[in-house]
Image 1 (cartoon, rainbow, N blue to C red):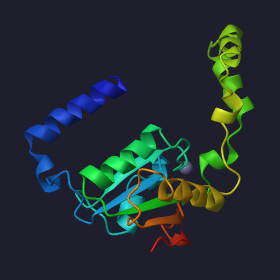
Image 2 (image 1 turned 90 degrees about the vertical axis):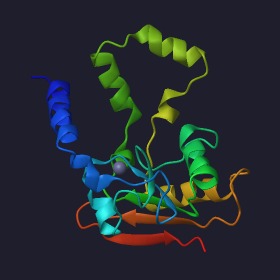
Image 3 (image 1 turned 180 degrees about the horizontal axis):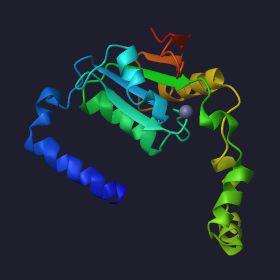
Length: 185
Ligand SMILES: [Zn+2]
């Protein structure tokens, strides 16, 4: 059976057996918090559990690296919606040690795209259209610097409520230990 088939089969049982009941909650975060963090697999359960968060407690926005790359991209929009529409009163940016984005090499990714059949013409077209793929696919060298930068972007965003504290932290993907990088109060 395919991965999707397996997943759907499990899902049918999950719903039939009402396994969802223990997760029932509302769309508003009980802890009035929105977290921006990384999509790293090690953080899926570890991150909320390390902070005593369960279903219903918090909004979590994820991407590769916990980075706000663009002031009017979908990450920033999600954070603004969490604050203005969903009762989040504080923002946490949580990067992590050993993040894939810290060693990201655009040459390497572009090489893999070519191996999988994206042709040279496509890269030339993007180049002529003014899209700098190397810049777009770049990572960061220091997670602390990256977290501070994202905190600044959020804190100083022209549409962000100035009364919302924005904190920056780094988590260990092994132990869940949090280190404070920026305190937003
Ligand atoms: Zn990461």
